[in-house]
Image (tube, rainbow, N blue to C red):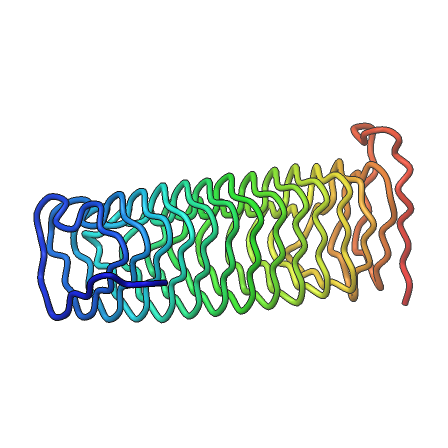
Length: 284
């Protein structure tokens, strides 16, 4: 990235103070309350900066944000933009990262991640922590995540092409209506996990929460564990599940194969969907 101009130790506020800037390096710059400080820009790098005003990065192509802080007033800060690299940054503002392409976040904390990462394509997260993250990642795709911690409900709904490794996700109604999601070596806590998903694959994961993995199409579980509160699992699902230890209860799986060391209760009643031929095995 080539910089035509550098601004150091400066303060800006008001409406569009750096509108349509290109090739700009910002160091220790503060953006005070106002709107759209860096709208319609390209090739921007911000280092040790503080953002307090609304919508600072809209319609931006090519930007790096390193060791910065986005205060609560900088809500909806990054929308309609592409090619972002963010490192070592604290994001206190909600409703971040909307309608974006190609973003990479490393060592980023987002303690108020409400309605964040909507309609985003091409996401790489490493060492990222989010909280209060209700409706995170709605309608997003091509996501690669590792070393990740999340608290917030209704996450990853309608997402496609997702790979997650070494995560702790505390979220009810997570991964609903997803397609082509694979999760490795992670802990997934929250009721109603993965309903209406297609091609959801869980590898060496531990899951907790009532009524998990119902209405799934082509669910795969490999060497997973299920907490005692995972009751009434797999209703109306097609699956191939290998579970270590005990499953509290299984209800009306549609088709496929379930293997566990112990199953507390198997419920097969008149409401089971056809072909109603799921093989259920208990192997001690």
